[in-house]
Image 1: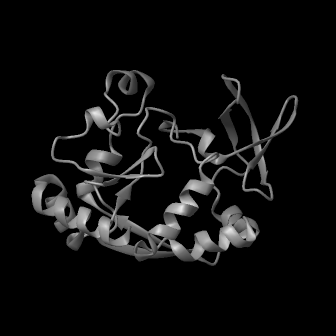
Image 2: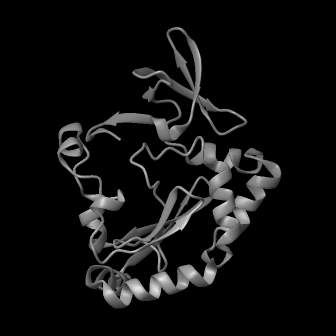
Length: 210
């Protein structure tokens, strides 16, 4: 799998001008290291990424825009490698890493992590050349516990009012108070505590819900 993905990346940079130009632009990216509560973070200034990160994400814009991850809507030049029977490994044309992959479902479906940990661990095991192995193998052996304190320190949701998706549809809301042993956000609501994955949570700020 490593060799197959290396060939995919090499081929896409040779044939796809947008991807080639944006990967070349990484050489001009400015990176600053910040210490936040004893944890080091790298902040990246990457102007070529603005087309992707600046895309409108309001409900109206999303409904009017074709899903750019669905196979039928990919640019003709973009190629993928199937994985696991229902994923498509793609080269991200707006990278933040020298080798930046995107792994969407083949079917149009919410890209939520909650049911995909096993799939992602299998992918990490197959792609050891791409830097996935160490933390994900630790997670596979020991679960979320080794990461919980660091995750809590970096979690911007704690102490804030959040909204979250409900399993049966609709949304709930409350105050995020903690992170449980499985990595789910504990939210105190009017009816009690809810445990939700942060990928299903949004926080309203001055720019709207994030």
